[in-house]
Amino acid sequence: MPDCVFCELLDGGDARWVAREDRAVAFLPRPGGELAPGHTLVIPRAHAVGVLDCEPADLNATIALVQRVGQAMERALGATGVVVLNASGTDSGQSVPHLHFHVVPCWADDEATFWPAEVSAHRMDGPVHELLAADLSAPSAGRDRL
Image (cartoon, rainbow, N blue to C red; front, side, top):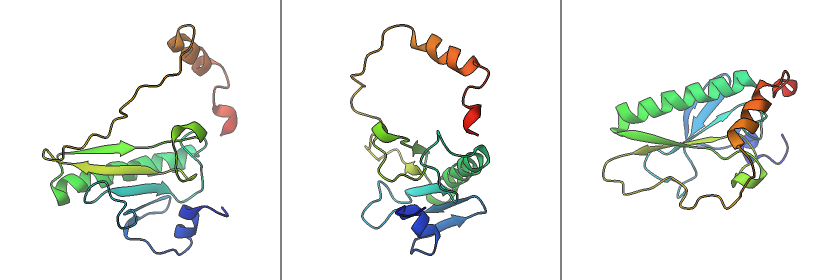
């Protein structure tokens, strides 16, 4: 995809690779961009903006690599947990329009918080769970995009 920094990286850019697989890759952020030692980005090789438009096979491979990276953080770095961060879509705060997950190792002495500090100010009328359930039970819910 033209003008996609991650697609350019996949096409031969310089990265500190952690894993390169058929459908997904993992690499460290640029120096100075790490939230913690070992902070890793995991992306699908095929371009997708976010989780909402990613092909299921690519999303499955990417999430499987996220899991393996997190497990490696526990074994190799002694992390006692991981935080997986993703933003997908225009109003989510997504910084690069290519699906990516930040896998951030955590330790007891971190004193870091990776949860949003504020709750959304957006308000909706009606029972949101019923709106979601009705949409998900519709015959073609989301499947027309696949």
